[in-house]
Amino acid sequence: MNGTDNSAGPRLTRRAIADGDLEEIEKLFSVGFPDRPNSYWRNGFARLRTRSVPEGYPRPGYLLKEGEKVVGAILTIYSRVPNDGSTAIRCNLSSWYVEPTYRAYAPLLYSLRQKGVGYLNVSPAPATHATIEAQGFSRLFRDRFLALPALGLNRRH
Image: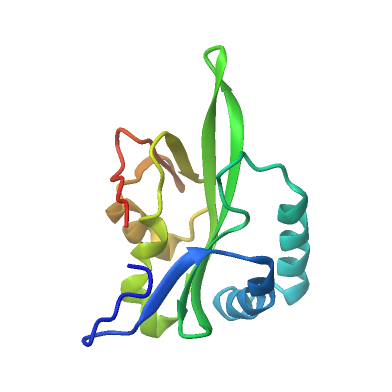
């Protein structure tokens, strides 16, 4: 969908977040998460920048842009974990927000899942539960969701 023109809707670009995007995402998240001060996001981005990430996976996540404006973002925390004598890739999907005008496009942030990765959302806001379940996640415990490659939809765009 990268840069797809759709006369019935906005022209959106979806891509990995770059360091130059962080200030704009901080502003976006300060609207989406009004109880968190900007320093919360600055500190979080600083921690994510120093974290080890398995090769080939983004840090710190993905964004949606219309033109030069960031209209949505999701943070991803990838890690390599022990798994029956070898290792597996896991990703915690964290802190995502899409401006209200673009909410119909929020699932595009989840459609970037990669084959062979187990995805978790360990702290979803109650208002996001229906969207998360619609994306193929299964509820494990109250307010904990999991999508494994065999359970989730793997879409390549």
